[in-house]
Image (cartoon, rainbow, N blue to C red; front, side, top):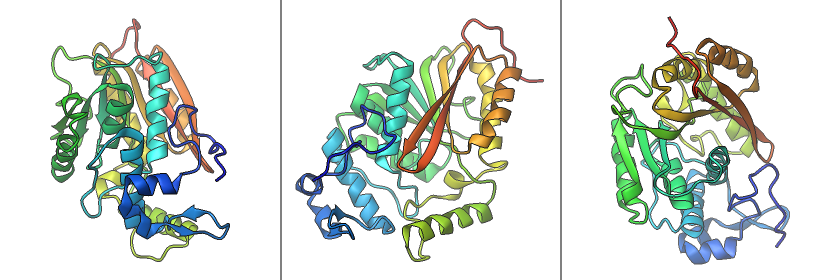
Length: 300
């Protein structure tokens, strides 16, 4: 089997070479039913099949991180594990590869899959708070944490009660986080999200039966889309400058960066970084900012 590196993935990513399906099947026998030879004669799965994608994730998490139990409720977002792992590794670079539970991370919108806390706690031993506004997703994330004793003591899930807030109501008085992270909704409306779903299905050659990675409304779209979501986050972050080190978020559309950087200038961020990420042909980036000793004020 060709073990060439996958283009764009972080060098520490455990999944930056082609999947060893025999090893994955040995780790997760249920995967065998979904593995077939593709047009090139290589083992693969049908990435347009949501069940196949979910079982592959279960195998990857078990093989890579020793997470024995992982699942999602019907219709919720099923994340691609290599890309999610990359975000964690880039965050580790931001804090000079510090490890252990003294590193505290806040994941905004952790989702039913709870994937960032599960990976970050397993890979680096970090402590996480996963914030979630959807009560079903929040309960499910708690269930996933409780099902994996290796990380149970490192992850706390908190329910956000206000759709208009990100940090308020989650970060407690006197609490400090080294990092915050977020994978924001990409779309500005349900119709736009549906079109994105159909486009992904066409690219994968799938039938119009549902997105292979799933996703509920709050996971896929919000008022103002990705740009509006992140601008509101930036504005609120200034009020928590003394309680967080690096604030970070994924940004899927590079054309949003100039307006986001303008928003960061308005709140007087002391340092801003844009970290490019890629998984194959899919390009993304992390926007990171911190306030340091700079004087900051919430926007008027």
